[in-house]
Length: 248
Ligand code: IPE
Ligand code: IPE
Ligand code: MG
Image (cartoon, rainbow, N blue to C red):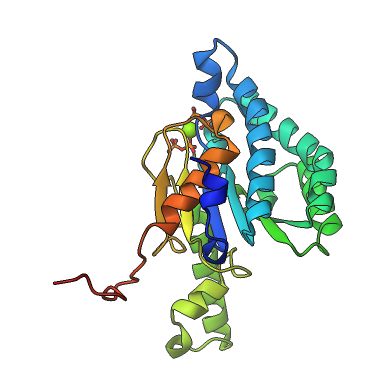
């Protein structure tokens, strides 16, 4: 089956979020260092970014480095940081050619000045692009994000600039790192694990979940298109009753 052709163009999810998992196991299976898996994973980032752009996704959020990933062995963290800086430079032509605006959600302060500089340059360079937002979750975890939001809100309440009765779901969303975009319609996790690992806990309230057993470096465009076709076959009810009741 050609999954690209099977996609209904008018029902493409506006926001797709991806937990890119399985780089380490991909490498270990081949007797390579885990870092080799991350290097290979960059090719998948490029492939899936272009595929998402091609079908008209407006926001693609990639979980690239979690708050908890700082606890990994130093050598692996260093390899990831080096890769991040080189990618932010090297992939600029891809971003510009495809009209991609780069965004970062996460604790940028937790990164070294060199990494932060590369991030800021890439953010500035692509800020005029409008076809798709590529949102990299870096130094991100949902509990970090929610903690920050609660602190900011409490501060505003204390200063009298926010009234307690004005706090509702919409207001809370304004304080999150994702305030510039809608919630994900589809959440993909590669690599076989079926968990959320501290990713977008608030935002995935009604996202459709798609789990692939394939390690991220082996995740192809076709597999991505397949997840979109599967998404389009589902009925989202948001707690309501079916729009077309089943025949009695
Ligand atoms: C995901 O792959 C990439 C990052 C977390 C940076 P992993 O490195 O978690 O790969 P596995 O899950 O150990 O195979
Ligand atoms: C989630 O993967 C984080 C990223 C993909 C960046 P992890 O490999 O860190 O998550 P766990 O440890 O399997 O839950
Ligand atoms: Mg993992």
